[in-house]
Length: 606
Ligand code: AGP
Image (cartoon, rainbow, N blue to C red; front, side, top):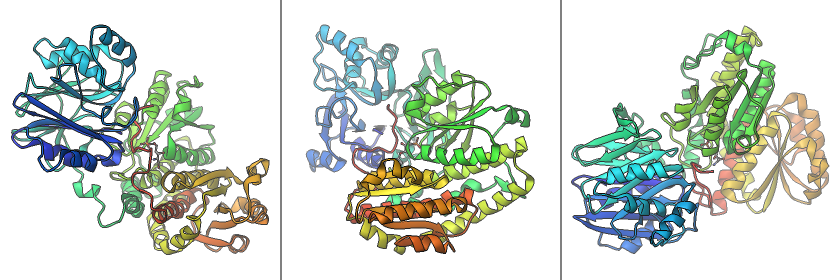
């Protein structure tokens, strides 16, 4: 969630740092700062707020220096303020540090350092790092950082710079991403690839416990066991893919990218009525040996898991548990070697999901990750990985990641169902040929954007909304409600429609908007009763149905039809109008769609 950029070379560092930090704005932040070294002279400038506030503070005369570090902070310890913004420095002002993550033992360290006479100027956990470097420094910055690493617990991606050694940057990581970008006569450091793409595509992706010493000509990487030789990772994706391409917001662009993202995710995995997941090494015997499937994730990815539960239980006839990762990791779950644990994470860096993955691995489960980011921590630590080929998702609100996660869950269910022989070749053929048709059907929904915009004009005036559904529709209702909340700040509740009369119906009053999902034919009659119930109390009902469903259209005030598809696959289509609805309501209410308040794209701390 915080952003890190570092530069060392022959150019002025300041513009490179600012431009790199701007590329990481999507990660979410509430303050920013830079530190530049000019000869031995160190200049630190930082400010609460967005990058333009930092630039305003700096004014027209950019700080000089060919080595520097920059940071965008998302507050964890201490409120967003100038003094809590990074970089942080020690008592002498000679050592500066930027850091993503959380130092868990910072309070003990702070007390010890205070007792030794160190003076603290911020409320952050990060500041202890600068004082520890000062404490351990004996003429070698790398050696000092090594000692600091041995003393701290928690997660970190950090970069250290010092006027005593104005010819190198030293950085290290544990449980928080960090990359070194390789140039000619210059090198870069960043927490994420987009910050580097204008300058280089050749990178070293640091692993946990690695420390890198970066000069303008060299990069030396080591762990506590000695030097490490790493392969250069060449970034293939295009910087343009991370730009808005004419859309007003990344979120709208990403909603429209879904047909392509789904096609990419299906590509080479479907053929002749069968699913081929070459990346997955699970034998028929192994598949038949699974006694339980557990899906673990956070937020939108968790909602994808909820759809997965219905699909897996139907196709595999195996019990499936779905859990929020932050709950799963602390509830001492009953796991064993005959469990298949599926972790789902767009970023592959979500702290709770990662902890759940590690826990499942320790308990001897087979852990399969579904993620969108190659080289992410989740992808590296899971036993097996299936990628969603959605491309970079920049908007905080997840859209194309969700639909591609659903696609991978369908592929995995069909694949495992074939191995266990719980689905017939005919069923597999019917599902795969319909999966092929989904991108065109998503396209058809996107063309009906104006219909959703019209409903959004009505919705945006209210402060509360309800989403109801049954079965798979309930799982999608949860995602629709989350989307609306997170970007339009309209309070929304998602309810299993049959549960309304056990309490929630008390909240339904005249004109409250209810979005009723009714795409599942076997539950239609039940949904019609639920729609009648809320309408009888004055609610205004928008129903999402499959085309040709005249009865639902009759029950609701207004209806949005998705193209006909197999009921199991309907979530991929029914979520699209809900994403558009949230988007338009947010724009009409003047919200910061791509960077909603208090939220970050990648939640790398608990
Ligand atoms: C989605 O709109 C959210 N911003 C959020 O719930 C997200 O899905 C969650 O934080 C999980 O992220 P991940 O998929 O990167 O693990």
